[in-house]
Length: 180
Image (cartoon, rainbow, N blue to C red):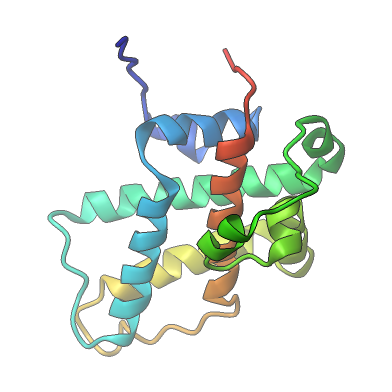
């Protein structure tokens, strides 16, 4: 089995003008699962409500995960800006099985069939800057040792973040294109 080396140089993940959002999503598929980032997001939510600090081995790991999350949301925003490209990618399905519906955590049947609907709903209501800032603020609150630092008010429902990550995971599974 041939192994591939992928780079997660920070410049790639933090670019505001990622050329191909699908390429970024596919790259992540080879490096870490979206379910890992959903789990991290759950931890951040729990520790924001807790009186204790989120305890990872290093702060740099947490910040790195945050940058990747923000990059995924930037990719989702780029997809939202170009619905015709999404349609061309053939990422929608017309049928859904009962098993597939049972595996969904956050999406409804229509969103499963067409993940673009999730991005449309979120980015119609919230700017990309607001989404990225909200994630960063959540992580900073989770990392705080003091109750004062835990003072976090989110104007974006956490469900929106989980829905976007689940939609991204569906895109990963359906995307059969090759990027060079």
